[in-house]
Length: 308
Picture 1 (cartoon, helix red, strand yellow):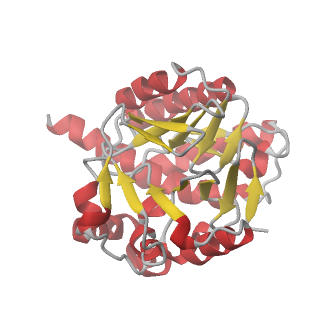
Picture 2: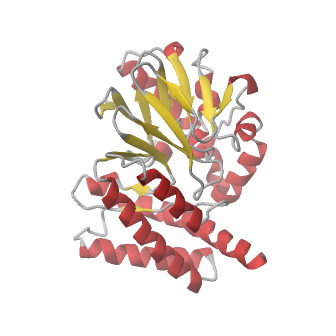
């Protein structure tokens, strides 16, 4: 099954991002007005359509497609998916809207990060028609029938990022602002929540302020873009903030992204070995990818600070 019920008339779809299970998820609201949060990249769209089929939802019934930010692992498939959803509006942060309508700069930026893997991971990038884009301001709301969603601008991971508070479940969809949940480990009772600091708008102080805004809602649940839900939001953000401090300490000593990635991996390896996680555990595949990209974003942040 692609679709899993997580309560409150809400379903989680595994989009098999980059070929990994439980890497990036999409959330489906089965309400009078139907909405989806996150599409992942275009190669994930078949999984998204399959999940809707399992839920007996026709793509024509979708009213809103929401992307927390425009990084391609969250929004890259939006244009392609919209072709199957003729009645849907795409909701995006105002700073991201023009890049989904004309994605050339978005594509160029992603190619700098992912290099030769870009095509395999993200093609095709389909422009979103401007008339189908709905920009959401800070504090904006939409009503789906028996639930209301509130949008909160939360920079730190990216300037074009918002999170979404759902009053029905008292849960909040944090995209990447409040970090990554490594579900492969949390399902085994080993908590691992880490920040994601990818290029090129990472700002640690903005990230901390945004996490404070998120926790001010006193959510009972956090729904992560990567991946799944936790009913322990304080534990999750405390670990993310603790690791963010570790990241910044290592950044002060680092001269290259490669060196920073290596040192961060050592820290994570030590943490996990103390928890009894074997070196053969599949989570290390995800960590290698994530730390490589995060290290690039942190070095970029350091270079910007030095140029001021």
